[in-house]
Amino acid sequence: MTDVTAASAAPRKDSLPAAAPARKAAGRAPAPLPQLHGVLVLRKPAGPSSAQCLTAIKRLGQKKIGHAGTLDPMASGVLLVLLGQATKLSGHLLEGGGKVYSGTLRLGQTTDTWDATGALTAEAPWEGVSEAQVREEIAAWCALAEQAVPPYSAAKHEGQPLYRLARKGLAAPSKVKRIEISQADTLEVSLPLVRFRVACSSGTYIRSLAHSLGTRLGCGAVLTELTREYSHPFGLDLARDPADFTANPALLPGCVQPLSAALPHWPQVELLPDEAARVRNGVAVPCRAGAAGERALLLERGAALALAQRAATPAGPCWTVLRGLWN
Image (tube, rainbow, N blue to C red; front, side, top):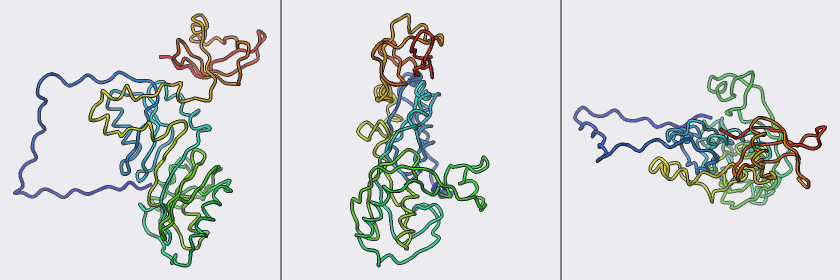
């Protein structure tokens, strides 16, 4: 999706030169933080891209960094930043992790990006649409099993992101993807503006929901505001603004959630010292009597050591390493 940038005016010749940055009073700059391991729950502000938010954290000594699903620049809310060994959890967090969004859409307009940041492509009267129709159509999102992928998106065609093709003016084939909407509520209707909340599967395009609603109502609609309130298993209650950490990097270690908190539904198995040593060497360890589930998070002295899968072996059921989480 096209990022919104602001142009800066050139300084006048008679303007004063910019002040030199103030020197630090005394002492050396604080040493960079060591690499941390866990999940940082950011409250992304509207405007910067998700990549810019990650870069701000990376500059604080966090070279091994990833995410569990980005947000468009116009969107705000929960952005899960994976640090160190937590980068190995990305696929598992996205696998069954639901998300909750609240947002605002505007009837009567259509843009090329399906949100308010794009170029206007059509306008249509919305006055004939009733509040009851809007509520009915939003509730109908729960019946959707698939949706159209926006032309400005990171989805790929022949190795190229769709947004790159769109920016070049090249036509890309229409794509659809499977989705699941478990809840869709209308929060407020003040036509042409509509506020809503939706709980959905990972990867759902909220822009597409707004666009399809506008199509069904016959007047078009664009997404004007979006906040991610929850990204499994973390919500806004734990989220911190990226600026908090750039202003005071010492806050960062205390805000990182442990690896075990990222997979709350995985059974946890505390290993004996000899079992932990075997796991570190990639050797399976026996499942203890009563151990439930096909997968487990193996712990060593309370800290996450490995993701494991139950397997049948000649010696009986064993935990085999799916992914090691040690340094």
